[in-house]
Length: 330
Image (tube, rainbow, N blue to C red; front, side, top):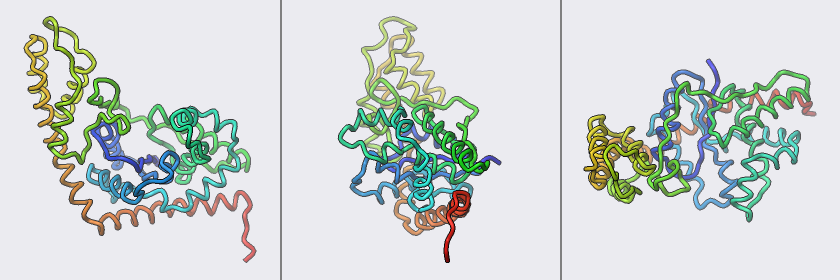
């Protein structure tokens, strides 16, 4: 059974794009692989160095992933900062990471452009911390998006470099995890692009019915088809993409036919879509509400995850220190 690791951002609520893009696959993975899922609160400080309430952010993310279907009995779910071994491995790997290669990473250059007033050392060494997260558990597979592929390549480089420098085949060189199926990409409500936290175009799992209806009714459309059997414009294609994951097939066919016949009323489509999203989200939102008020359960999950994760992490750090040559005098 392969060891698979995935990081979870500790900022922002989960939206439908997260759910259909990754979480559904995570839920499946936890029954088929040895999975580690961690909430990356250290990583969040690279872009939000002074969070208003870091603990509440972490609690919200943990709550929502549990409500969506991650099972702490099947997978190891933990908070990154609960493992001090990660920080130590990050420090040791930094000694063999070179400033030139770090400055050339695409993610660093992108962040420099986006936040020129906050180009910190953590931002520069982000790939090193990501490598520490992965190789501390000797993970062989990591699900990553396009924006993280280069950082995964860097993790392989640091693992290989350690093995070469100390003449030992110790760290596993992690590869990208292939879900063996096309990932569902959920579009945003603004007519272009995908649903995202920073774009303000998402529907969140914790949104109220009222908020969902309001967001969907404001979704971008066009002036309507000009002739029968017209092709969908991007905004309309996006609305149907959302329908494809939450609506009955008969509902989808009804609106496709009315579009083809130039009789479609976008207001009716949006009202139906909003109700279908509400029907889909409601049970998850109810679980979010229940779990968020159960501090005892959240504490148990976080503690259990930290203890399970530290078994691997402490063993790795002990062996890494021995390989490098650290010895105690007492």
